Length: 362
Image 1 (tube, rainbow, N blue to C red):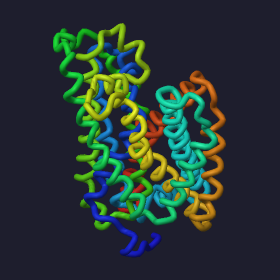
Image 2 (tube, helix red, strand yellow):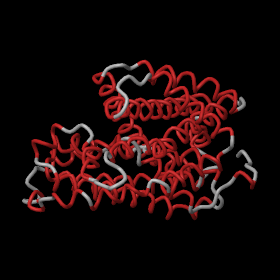
Image 3 (cartoon, rainbow, N blue to C red):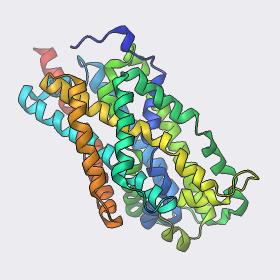
């Protein structure tokens, strides 16, 4: 097991911010329309079910990590051996890079549609990734600090709960369970892209002081995410008719239009601009995890790995030009994430249990 200096470790309660900040990104801006296609006004049930599923996966992850000698790279080596384990670790690296590309490109599209149609994606992504490089060079504690401030600073999101309620229709929530279990299950799966990110725990676990004690904070982070998505979904259901919801790609941003203040005429502009602070930890933690994974697999310096990963993310995030292409990227990432989180992790959980039990008996 790699020994990490005490000065690089973070307190267990910071896991709350690391998990929560990774799950809240561009997904919350427009997840409502996606899941409402399957479950309509019962979509809030899908949010609860998705949150419950994440709690189960987080519990499995801690079971895997608590009895390991490090992070997911070490677990793969323990279960599959050096070569096959290294291959699975590299797949996780690709997954994290894909996640950062999806978040960055989707946010750029939001800025282009809502604020600056002529914004050059190459230029914006270059400066965003330059900032990411600077943050990651500061070490994991700096990355954790960004996660903390990304939650504390944009507290204005709480306004979303109150302002649209002036135009809400509570009867939209009725009748409850008007959709089949299959439709609600499909909507739960469609929530995947919005709740991804917590699996980065596999990489930063060794950087937590007394990591076993951080499990309650991880579950609290997931709970906070679920509650925020649930409140947003219920507010959206009461605010929009089914026909309106189907036409709003970014329903959350559209609700920002109801916020009227004497000093801000277009509050949605404030929302889009300051949302960069919310998506920044998504990019930083994902790229930090990917660079650390390659560092451990190939035994190279993390700084040098970053100089390889960042240009790849830059080119990939700037390559997509059309709305259809970005939609496809989100669909592929949703499927990639679903199979990684809800299929592969349970399989890995069972394998680690069996292998450790056999070795213990021997």
